[in-house]
Image 1 (cartoon, rainbow, N blue to C red):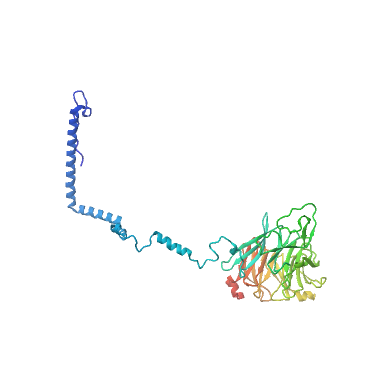
Image 2: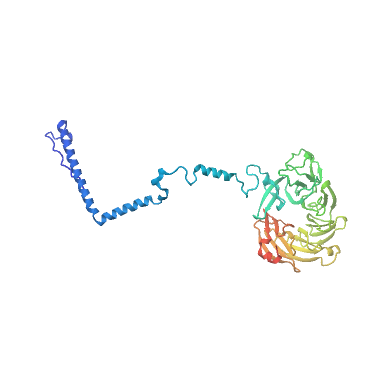
Length: 468
């Protein structure tokens, strides 16, 4: 209700309003005016109360009370479980765990050993993770960057289908080939990587050493260099400025160790020479010059320890008995050689891939006998150079890789191979492939990065070759 206001006091004769009145008389007027205003306020409040009581007697009053109760209930909803009315009467120790009880329980759990945790969790040492277990699949590869070259040791995790570099070795020159050996002419068996380099050397590295500074051995003889030579990491101890051991007079293009004597290593070079080495004595046993161009590949026979296969850029494939150096049997290839292997399932057959994308299979008996029909079949496997051909432990299975980045699986059960499956491995041009005798389905490819292809994961190949 609006407050009723009194009219302003009249001014005195001098024209002053009530606000200008001074003295005792002015004070009495103010007190009287204030009393009148309080009376008016009381009257207004009485009127409002009467109006409220009148409204409460109707339905509108009941609705307002219900709304107020609903609002209060919404604010306190969910608090009943805490029993706040009896909050001050709670006992100190209740059934629920208090703060320090929780800490004590967590501490006891922390002291229990996790059954899924391997090793000692209280140590910061990484030695346990550095160990390679006997069941771990391991392979070696060489790689090159702008400012460094490495020999890398990879571990493949079959359960996770993943691989990682366990450790690597810095190399002093550009690597062209690598071969694994179990002996390097030092005490006991071990694990060694023989690397053929562009600087004409063959270095043997101990793969069980995490950070080797130099190879355990370099094959060949040291040639003196003019002037002073600064020793680099990866150089051979004892040579220093006097020179570096040279295995060939050209870049080393291929290496292969004998399955019968792991101290015997064969090498081929751009100097058109094939050599057989006794690694334990660091001595070249035989040297062969039956090719007229770069020797691209060399392979020992898997069952005949004295028989050697070689192929070169002169478009010729050679069969050699190392006990008879001048008796190499030769045959023509369709193009320049890229790779060559012995068939592990047919001992009298060998295969070679060439730079026009083709693969040829030969009967070695007819080559030695100089008979007709030496070439059993020819396959155009790729549109560009077929850089590698490899048979697998699984019978009738042949694998090829090419510069087109394609890996292909062929079935050789019939008189001519038929394509079973081709796949782009997304690793750029492929330069090599190797199968594992311990895991028939695993094949490793080398491109811009290593790729492991599990053939047993392809249902089409499982149906064709019966992978277990």
